[in-house]
Image (cartoon, rainbow, N blue to C red; front, side, top):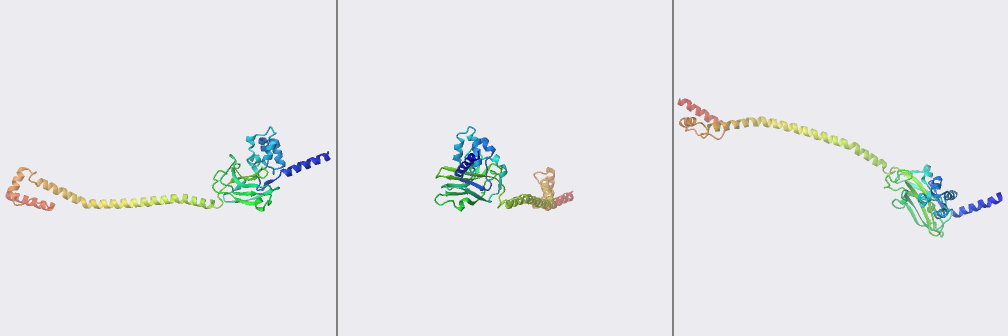
Length: 308
């Protein structure tokens, strides 16, 4: 039994090594599990469990003969069908502007293109531009270079709340080996916190605005109220002074007008007019001031008394 079983294991190991080409070893990338088996089929999951370095085209070859493969639920072109539900304990926490170091293990070079991007898992679409990319990657002519397996990416600004919940976003390493038409993917789940470079200052600034705005308003209101009170007091004083000055003037003017009207020949009774004409025709009626009118009346009365 052992003599027959050992070659089988060796053959399976050889197949695994042939298929194994590349995978992200750091940060912790998604791995296959039971949620993947439920969506992509048991055999596809077993294949990736034994060789997580394998490519998507190889998965599809296995899936094509499996009745439990559900293409829509598997969504195999997103993270090779590896599911967030199997990787909830491997979520990284990053901030905008933070540098993230990547390590990639490539076991066999095949010329192609590659990039690392932030991917929206709900739509399997890249958010913004790739964080790093290679026009020629893992070339068979030059071999795998150090900057293709050890590099850093910077978490971009502007993601907002898109990546605030675990499972919504991944950093996806994507390598398409054009020379053999094979696609390799590894996904790092992450959530986005505050901006590491500006969150402190922006929070301080925001706090300053909130705390200073009411103080400024209160100061302005107090100043306005004080000014209004001062203005009102000044105005009231001015009105009081003006009234005390103008009241006698008004009374004086009213009296003069009444004196004029009562002494006017056109409005006085005819008897008064006749007497005034006989007794004081030599005294002309004054029109220049109240005092002169009073003097005129006094003189008129004097003449009348003297004539009697």
